[in-house]
Length: 66
Figure 1 (cartoon, rainbow, N blue to C red):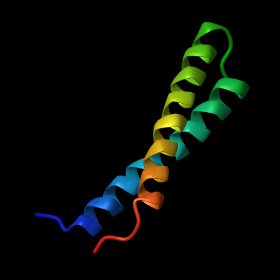
Figure 2 (cartoon, rainbow, N blue to C red; figure 1 turned 120 degrees about the horizontal axis):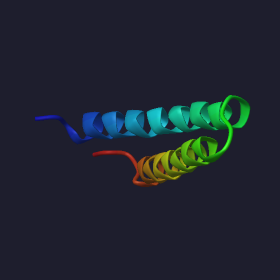
Figure 3 (cartoon, one colour; figure 1 turned 90 degrees about the horizontal axis):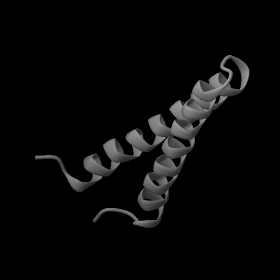
């Protein structure tokens, strides 16, 4: 079983990966794609950005593990 600290670390990694994917998808949708596909990719990027932000917000403001 993982300690709470290790679990928070892995959860924060997921949040960071979501934010990096969001950046990449936004760049892709704005520079390489056109039409409805660009809209779908951008929408997915904004969802990932929102989820990543919520995860990081939770990790930062939940405080240290004891």
